[in-house]
Length: 67
Image (cartoon, rainbow, N blue to C red; front, side, top):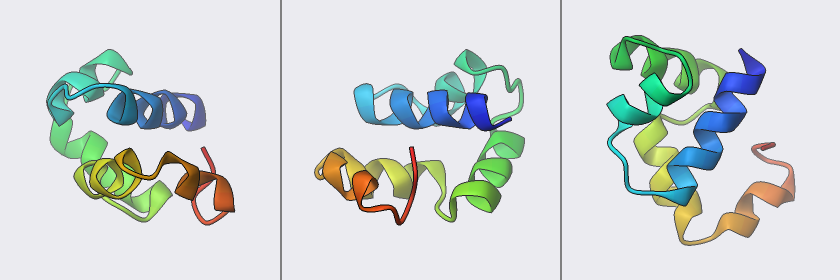
């Protein structure tokens, strides 16, 4: 699960693909389930993660949300 979520983080920052496509690309068929798991593990929804760290990718490096 950790590997999939790390890949999802990379995908969310690297492109503008919809959350459903990101979910499928990392092995989750259900985008809602993926979003719930992502939020539980990361503390942010996939959309919130993308919005917060896309403009400041170095914010991830501060240790608050490990990549």
